[in-house]
Image 1 (cartoon, rainbow, N blue to C red):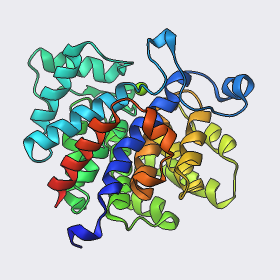
Image 2: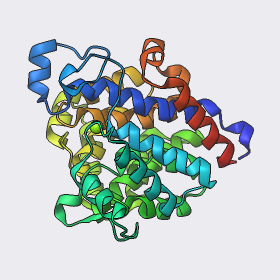
Image 3: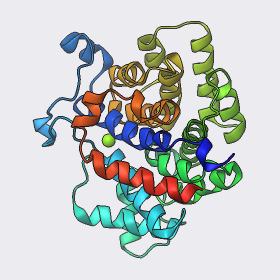
Image 4: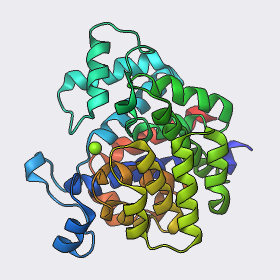
Length: 312
Ligand SMILES: [Mg+2]
């Protein structure tokens, strides 16, 4: 495959899609799906969230970390865990955290105190959060042509914050989907079985298989995300995100809206869906009203372009 076969818009769509999903979910983080349904009926466009001191179109820690990851890749000329760790500490020091995750905060504090990036990550059962899955898109884009290297790259940057096999498996599943979307050869019908093969035996793989059965049975998105889970546990996030993407693979707006409506860690589930659907469908498939209003649109496009140049 040569460069001209791979449209730049897939790279742009993935990073912009991630930011838009994050910003759409931002006002709903922590709410139950039933509360969102009762209060709003349907999921609206961007909303102000004064209690978070964030305005409509602004995103949270998911996009912050994606941006620092992307900058590191561009400045280093590839994926470099030590440089990524330095960039994450820069973010910590900026104090603009926007809802930093618990495992991530503890790990970055250790890095700041001098711990090595391969030893800084949070360990144990409580480290199975979605903090790797949510920020992995730039790693997937730059490595989309070499899946063996991508598998290792996800681990090396994932370990900075999450020394947990499920957190890494979830990051790998999302990276696999984003990479396929970016290359242009993602097949919705076989995505889950291929992703399971890529990540290997894990709870993430088991829940993805459940998502696949729900899709085959034609289950409605609200019921499927309720049963798969939409909390910060990576097993839930990845399964619900794959369901929302694959339920309406050609419709970015429908997929991210289903993820937001699932509530709880709504910003992260929707960010993951946005990264996958944006890569698969390209930038033009993202509604223009969202592209116009999302925070730092131009800066995110530049990062996607920088990664596109590096990938070939
Ligand atoms: Mg967030």
